[in-house]
Image (cartoon, rainbow, N blue to C red; front, side):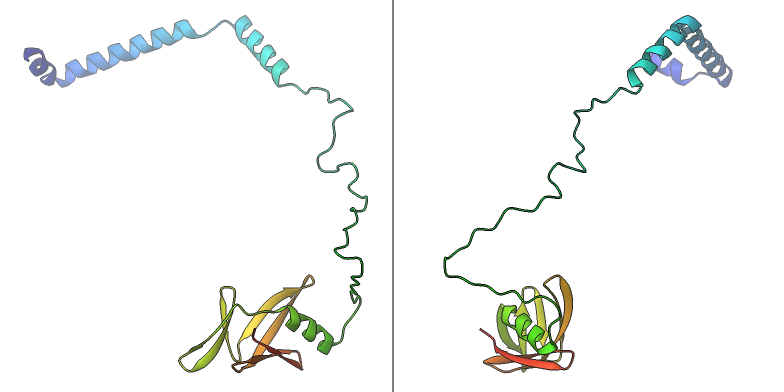
Amino acid sequence: MNIARQIGRLSMKQCLILAVAFFGLGTALLANTVSSPAKRQEALDKAKNLLGDKPIGTSTKNPFNPEGFGEGQGEVPKTGTNSVTTVQTGPRSGRDLLQAIGGSLKPSGFFVLSGEPTLVFGQKRVKAGGLLTITFEGSEYTLEIVSINQPNFTLRLNREEFTRPIK
């Protein structure tokens, strides 16, 4: 208890003397830890040797250009023997495109909110007159929901319209 009181009562001069003593002791200890130039050069040479370039063998494969990347994919097995699917390639008319999109577009729900019928497509709710952006065959299309009646709804793409059942 007495020692604590004495430490707490050190004068400014005594604190300065202690600080200089600790600083001098610290630098004296650091002077002993600095190695000789020969040892430092040896450590640098060892580090350069460890971090230096290493030759790469010719058997290393490039992960960004794998073998067989340009080759065709395997054939998809047919589900049935008599199944014939026709894929229309090239430009389509607006009506054909809208029918194809409308055939694949299926709302997940229908409800009436404040007297307005609303269709649900996943997380998106669309009222009559609203726009719906979808991706079809790799292209984005913005469809307008023209009208929503209980059994049907009507889609518009450009100037073409297509009516399909809700379910």
